[in-house]
Image (cartoon, rainbow, N blue to C red; front, side, top):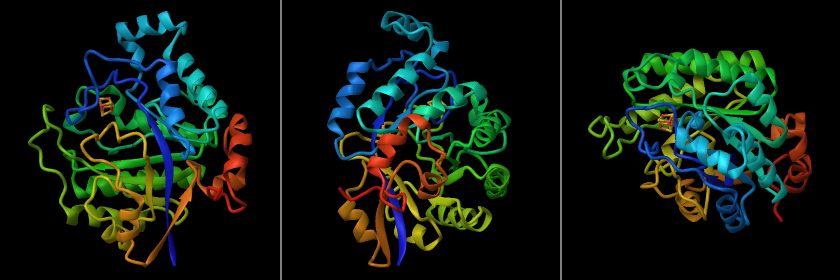
Length: 324
Ligand code: SF4
């Protein structure tokens, strides 16, 4: 029976400050906040069952003066310094950080690697789109550079495409080919998320139609056809009604789910409970918990050296999450 994997995470949206202004974004704020270490600790303490500390937030948040001021009050010269401390703290609490910080330089990736099991950056689309006209970090070449640099540093990596933001089917195929090409060169892409755009109220794209079920199915099939076999296709279970047709189309992972934190990027779409996901498998697939790093990279030892003890405690002999 084919295995479908998932990871138990705690979602830590460190800040809603972001230098980009994507036309579909409902997360970014022009009056941004940043979580302090006590707030991070509260979330981590709630999430006893989770292995993954998912650090997802806006890109280059210290372009905002108010964030720089807050960081200074907290005693950190830059957001990167603070992020590193948060990663270290999460590791000390027994979690495996997976940082998704937007575009990063090679030296920033290098600094974060020791305290992360894996990292991520959505490519979204490898073509210029109107919705990214005010988002310098969404320029395809800038994102591709970050993903390539992660490969040079042997960081197990999650990327993905966002479907329905103004691109055509041929653009999706091109974007998947770009990811496939990067993986052929560096071998570090563990999974590719095929995520459907969902319009958010109050955004410039609130009336833009989301992709149809059929378009999503065709995109998942294209992903499975184009991507190398060792790259898993992921479908977010809270953004589609039923994951079964997508599993039949080739997806084999449903990403991180949490019983303590919502999907802060799509808070109106709660994570389904594991029992509901089991029902969707129709007895044809077996659900198995993984870590934020895929078994292949556990075996290769590509995780950060400072997460080694936590990782060895949480993984079984095959590199999945151990049962206890
Ligand atoms: S990069 Fe992410 S957080 Fe920033 S505006 Fe775009 S979608 Fe929003």
